[in-house]
Structure formats: structure tokens, C-alpha cells
Length: 382
Image (cartoon, rainbow, N blue to C red; front, top):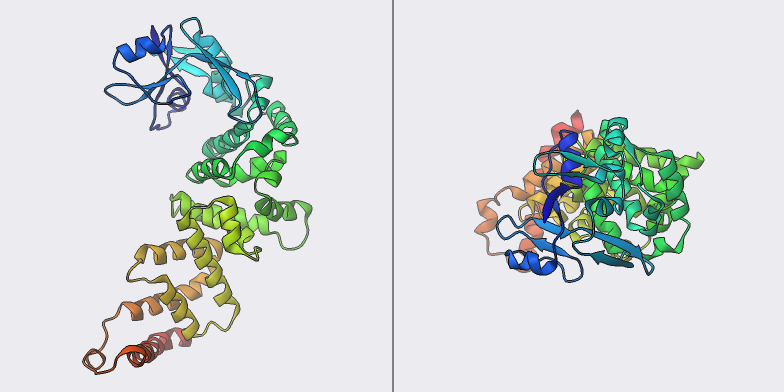
């Protein structure tokens, strides 16, 4: 039995990048032998085991044969007879088909190191097209490695374009797309995830609302919203590494066009926190189009519940400044003033009054709006 470090950990070591997870391949062993050595099964359907001490995943070397539609439609073959080379050749990209033995020697059967040097995301065999999930993975790797000059190889791009026209793409669930998109949002250049999928034609089927926004710029019609979208993502990256905030920024221009935001969020399976941030951004966007009265801003900030949910307010500011840097320079002090009013302790004459219910609520609101007017007076002069 031989054990090899494989995949992303080897790739990132060679690129001198940090990595969090290590994956291992075991050659020459059976499931029974793994269990006898204290490993635990990690998956009912795949020959993957958890190390008894580290908890890391150790997979038996395997081959895969396409047997049914979709990214799960593969028949596996594994056992002591499957070689390391066979296991590596079933993988998606050459730079992910690298292994390292216990002595640190790199095993490279697909010229992955050459592609690392050239900065190429290149498929290994035509079998790449059998798994539609690989379209999302290569887009995510573009988001991860684009800042080091990595690009999709021409031949791989041509194959991706053909994949985007097949019914296989329709087998990808909204949940699976969201998972890969969320991971891409945490990478150094998240906008490349959308760009790669748009260029091969897959985004138009997987997330048509975003593709429509991006295609508008490609066609040169009207306001170049896609450029604004990418610019907003580029602005949010240095100030927030939170994938949920970045996702809300990326999806804002598409959300703007939805007559039923809740239904669209349910359709794309967006997480609750990003959905709430999108809703808050749309509310703030509508405030910018009216007279921006102090009362309207106050009501908006009140809905954010800055005392109970301070993170929600801070996330809105981060995302809004990425979307509208110039308007927010003027609006942020006014939002801050409204927040200050809501966090301020109530005066003693109100807390000691005998007012109750609706009457007390109206009195508190009047006091807060008067206080806000005082705070905004210097801002209005400037």
C-alpha cells in the first residue's frame, strides 16, 4: 500500500500558495484493509476514508466511466489493481493531476507543472466534457488563480463552449451552482467566475439573470451595467473577504430587475444573509432616487435594527460603498447620523412619562426626528 498527496495541495505548494486541506490517494489497498487500520468511511458511495488521527480524507485510487447523465452519473472502479496514473488521468485539469510521494517527489503524468509555469487551465482528456460540474470548477479556478496570470487554454475553452450547448448542463442543480459560486466569491478575483462562464455560454443557462446583465455590455447597448458590476466586485474585494457580501454585490444589478425578489432568491437558492443584504441594498437604492429626506433615511436605518443587528448595518455600508462610491460619500454621514439617533439613550422626560403604547411610540419618533434634524444641520450646510 502506497500513499500520495494529490490535487490542490500539491498544486498550491508548487505555486507557493497557502492551502487549508490535503487530499490523499491510496494505491494497492482494499476497503477492508483501510478499515482494519482504523480508517473510517467518509462516504457511503465513494471509497473515501477518514484518517484515525488527522481526520483527513484518504481515497482509494479509482477510475470512472460515464454511465448516466449528470455529474453523478459515473460508475466507479477501485481496488489494489488501479494505478496512481489511472487515478490522476480521470481528473479535470492538468494542474490538479499532480501527486507527491512521501519523499516529496512530484509525480506528473499530464504535464501539469508545465501548465503551472505557463499559467494555463487545461483539461486532461475529452472526458472532461462528461461532467458538467467541471465548467463551474474551472471558472472557480480562474477566480482563484487569475491574479497570477492563469487563463483558460484555447482548446479547453472550445470544449467548454460545446459543453454549454448540451443537456448535461441542465442536470446541475441550483444548490450545486450556488455552492461553487460561493466558493468562487471567496477567491482573489471573484468576477472571473462569471466571466469564464459567460464567455463559454454556460452562464446564460445557469444564471440567465446575470448573463443578461453581462450580455448587455457585450452587445454595446445602453448603460454598460456589466462593467459596473465587475467594478463593484473589484472594489469590494479589498475591504471584505466575506463571500456572502461579495455575492450580494455581484447579484445586485440582476436583483434590481426582478419583479418578485423573494421568488428569484428562492429560485437561485441564495442564502438568507445575502438575500437580506440584497433587499437592504435595493431599499437604499430607492432612497437615493427620491429627495433623501431625513425621515426616509431614518426609517431605512430603523429597519436595519442597528442596535440588535449591528453587523447588518456594517455589511450594508460595505456593499453600498462598493456599488456607489460617489453617492455614498454624501449619504454615509447621514446614515451614520440616523444610526446615532437610534442608538442614543432616550431623554428622561420620555422614559419617566406616563405615555404608553402608540402614544409613547409617536413621542419617541418625534424626539428622534428632531434630534436627527439637529445632527443633519451641519451636513446640509456643507
